[in-house]
Image (cartoon, rainbow over all chains, first blue to last red; front, side, top):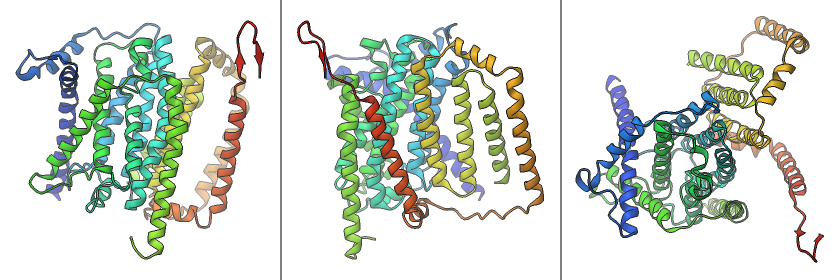
Length: 325
Length: 174
C-alpha cells in the first residue's frame, strides 16, 4: 500500500515535470523548424543547437515589467492566464503514456478532457474582457465564438471512437486498438478532431483570436512579463495535449512493435503530431473569421454527424449478426 | 468522502450567494461557474460521474460562456455596475429576503423531522444513463429534441439577413 502511494506520487510528479520541461522546449523546436522550412538557421548560438535560447527567453519573461493596466479589471486580469495553464495541465491527468503510467484512470476520461478544454475557453474570454481594450475585446469575442463552435464537433467526432470501444476510459480505448488503429475505421473522425484541435488551441491557421496583423495579438495584447508567458506556455501545453489525444485515440497510444518500450512509442507519435502542428503554421494562410465559422458549421458538423450515424449503424449491424462484442 | 462532500456543498452555497450579491455581472458569472464546478464535484461524490462531466461541459463550459459572450457584446461597464448598486440598495432586499427565510425555515424543518435516506454508493456510469434515457425516458429525449429544434428555427428566423444591394442605380432590398 505504502509502495503504491509512493509510485503514484512519483508518476504525478514525473508527468508534471516532463510537461513543464517539454512545453518551453517547444519554443526552441518551433523556431528551429520554422527556420528550417524557410531556409534560415533560427536560434543557433546559445548552447548546443541553440537550445539555451529557451533559458534566455524564460529569464527575459521573468525580468520584464509585470504591468497591470490601470483601466483593467485587476482580479480577473490576473486569474485569466492561470486558467489556461491549469486546465491544460489538468487534462493530462487522464492520458495514459504507457500501461500503468497514468495519473488517474477515470472511467469518464474522455469527458474529463472535453470538460477541461471547454473550461480553457475562459482564459481567452476573461483575459480579453478584463484588458478593457478594444483589440483585446474583439479577440476575445472571436475566441469565444470559435472555441464554442469547434468544441461541439470536437466532442462529436470522438464519439465514433467511444462507440467502437464501448468506454470513455482512455486506457481502454488504447487497448481496444490492439488489432487495428482507429485511424483506419475512423479516418473522418481523425481529420475532424485534428482540425477542431487546432482551432481549440487557436494555433495558426486558426489563430483568429490573436491575429497579429489585424488585432495586434488580440486577447493578450495588454499582457506582459510572466502573465504573457503563461498564455504562451498554455498554448504549447495545448499543442502537446492535442497531440497526445490524437496519439491515444487514433494512433494506438503506446502500442507498437516490441523493439522500443511503450513510453518511447508514445513520445515518438506525440512529437510527430507536434511537428505537423508546426508545419501547418509554416505553410497555411489564415482564413477569414466568417470563413472559419462557415467551414465549421456548414461542413464539419454535418460530416461529423454522418460519421457518427454510419459508425453506429455499422456496429448495430454487426452486433445483430452476432459479431462484435 | 463525507468531508469532500461537505466542503464541495459549502463552496457551492457560498459561491451562489456571491453570484446574487455581486454588482459586476462578469464577477457574478465567474462565481456561478465555481458554483457549477462545486455541484459537479457533489455529483461525482454521489456516484454519478457522467452527470458530473456533463455539468462541467454543458453548464460551466458552454452556457455560461455564451452568457459572458452576450455581456461582452453589450459592453456593460461602470454605468451598469452603478445601476445594479442602486437597484440592490435598501428596500429591494426585504421582499425576497422574507420569502427566502420562509422557504429556508421550511427546508430546515423538513430536514430535521424526516429521516435521512441512505445514499447508495453505487457508481452509475454513462452506459446506465444512456440505457434509461433511451429506454423508459425516450419521450423526454424526443421532446427535448423538439424544443431545441424550435429554438434553432427561431434563431434562424431572427438571424436571417435581408440581401441589400448598394449601388447608385440598383439600390433595392430583397
